[in-house]
Image (cartoon, rainbow, N blue to C red):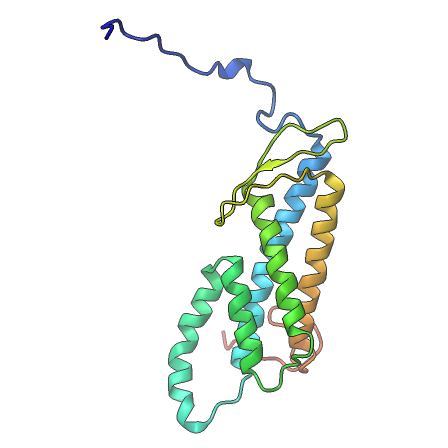
Length: 198
C-alpha cells in the first residue's frame, strides 16, 4: 500500500452554470412544477379540513360521545401532520363513518387520490435530469417498492397533473358541501360546522 496521500478535490462552484442544477429546463417548466407541488399542498389542507368536517358532523350515541371526543383532538392533530397517503386513508374512513355522507363514488375518488399521491411523490421528490430536445426529462425517483421511474415528463404533463389535482380538490370539497355543510375555512354556502367564540 502506498503511503502517499491521495489528491483532494472540491467542486468549483464558480464554474457551475447559473441556477444549477435547474439550469437545463426553461423557467416555464419550473413554474409549472412549482404550481403542481403547491396544488398538492392545498389538496393536503383540504383533506385535513374535510376530515374535520366529517368527524365533527357525525352523530354519536350517548355512550360513545366521551370516547369520540377524547379521540377527536389526536385525529385532528394527525390531519395536520400526516403525509398525503395517510390523509387519504383517514379521509376515506371519516366519510364511511359518517352516515350522512354520500358514498356512491367514494371508492373511485379514493383510488384517484392514491394515484395522484404516487405522481405527487415523483414531482416533489424526483431529481430532474436534463431535458431531451422536446423539453421532457426522466426524474430520478425510486419508490418504496424499489420501482424506478422511466417515463419522461414534460411541462404539458405537469400542467395536466395540476389540473387533475384541482378536480380532486373540488371533489373532496363537494363531498362535504353535498351534505349541506359549509366547507371549513371557506365562504361556501351551507350550515357552519364550527363558529369561533374568539
